[in-house]
Amino acid sequence: MNRPKNEKTKLTAARAGCYLVLGILCFLCLFFFYMLLINASRNTFQIQQGFSFLPGKSFLTNLQNLLANGNIPVLSGIFNSFFVSALTAALATYFSALTAFGIYAYDFKLKKAAFAFILLIMMMPTQVSALGFVNEMDALGLKNSLIPLFLPSIASPIVFFFMKQYLDSSMPMEIIEAARIDGSNEFYTFNHIVLPVMKPALAVQAIFTFVSAWNNFFVPALLLDSADKKTLPILIAQLRSADFLKFDMGQVYMMITIAIIPVIAVYLFLSKYIVRGVALGSVKG
Amino acid sequence: MNSENSPRKRKSISYAKWGYLFIAPFFLAFLVFSLIPLCSTIYYSFFQYFRSGLKIIGPNFVGLKNYITLFQADLPKYLGNTLLIWVIGFIPQIFFSLLLAAWFTDLRLRLRAQGFFKTVIYMPNLIMASAFAMLFFALFSDNGPVNGSLISMGLIRQPFRFLASVAGTRGLVAFMNFLMWFGNTTILLMAAIMGVDPGLYEAAEIDGASSRQMFWKITLPLIRPILAYVLITSLIGGLQMFDVPQILTNGTGSPDRSVTTMIMYLNNHMYSKNYGMAGAVSTVLFILCSVLCFLVYVNMTRDNDSGEKRKRGARH
Image (cartoon, rainbow over all chains, first blue to last red; front, side, top):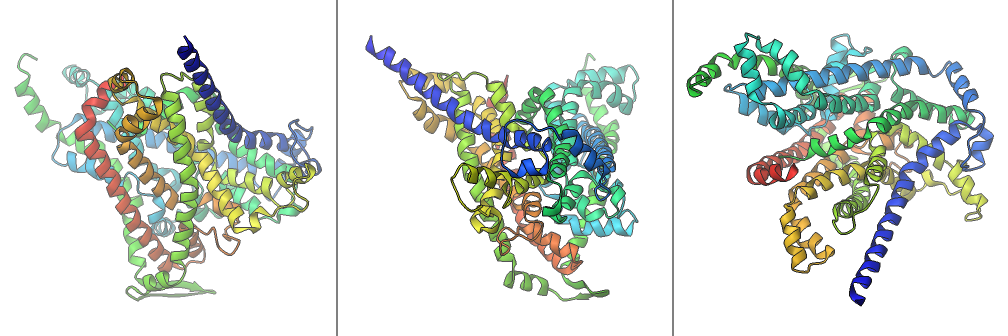
């Protein structure tokens, strides 16, 4: 009689310990973003006094000051970031699905080699070829353009791999063969039959590629010079190298908020699918 | 339809061209935007080619001179910085990820609100790293709110200058890396643990094994391929470390270049238009990453051959 009770208290204690650790980790994850939002609503003087868990009243003032600040073209920054990220997401998902389908559905001599090659380069960072890339874009007259920021995403090995996994698990070849019998051309079949089947995979990968393009800093910073072409991460860097202490801190927090909050807002709506996508995407088999 | 074999054979001949056509855009884009740039990057690394004032010096072929300069001068220091900061962040990352993944999948514990916890711990992964670093810079600066709060609580009298101390700056970078990646790793490891045959745990339970024993004797050995995958991909990610230290230190890597990473070094050379040296740094990085990519490839393909059936079955 004593033993089960003992076991039960032990389990409760273990559970309490788990929740405590989880609570601390969640606090760490949320605290900084909560402080960001609070500080975006306070003025410089209040911010320097330390943390507060209550918002101030300067949210709109900070926003107006930031938008009126001629040194930081926020609106065009948001537009550029959005433009590049949306096109990246569209190109990466469409062409990765196309490539994956090409390898999944057809038999050709180089099929195995092509697949092995993509797996080999999958984790290669783009930074290793950044020097040649920037020079090549310069030679093509694309140095100060947004095109080199989204066009390379046609070749996105990681997205390809996810799409290939998805096809392996949920695309029956019978459907494609049925379409052939109905006289559908292969390209038409891909666009009108395969893509709809892949919708869940496309959606998850569109989010991931959008976010990584939105956050991308290294290559855009090397390519873009003129103020009207800059994306948000470059503006953040510019904010950092500006003479910081003279700066209005409320505007700094507001700028960070603008860069971060859209992603968090979308995430909170779709977190279930995103978390599932993480689990599916990288586990092999 | 009746005879399955013969039409398929004919198909494989007549449809092959579609396969090539469908994968062509990928390989074309890869050629133009990655392969050619990579080759020219490696090519530049053998030349003296830089800007001095308004004059462009070179390109003059110098063989391996750039590499010799690189290894004699700063590269070991910056590679060391990169790896050190990565390790400081990775140890707590893998520790907490394993711990949380084991807890979330523990059948006896049956933790609640798992969806909420997973959502929260994964969130920092999606944050713009440069904005996150800017946030930390603002919060941890000498007269920022962290110091303000510590002083008003009476814990310290003088502001602690986080960004003037080597340990403080490296610690902050590593802490941010930890915070951004432990949720992602937790989810990966959870998926791996849930792929383990549940029968093994049931058998162990009947034999009276404790949760701890099951973790060390069953879970850990069976998820080793995925642990290796996490380790290698995290190392590749660590070698790319740039946004956070760049923004946090405004590109200086201060104090005393102790947080200057490989990519920051590359960025400095590209910014000052020293193409020869930038090419050499890139090539060294390329060689390091090639080895790691090859390991990922071996890990994935070997795993697919042996464990495919078991995992497929278990995932549904």
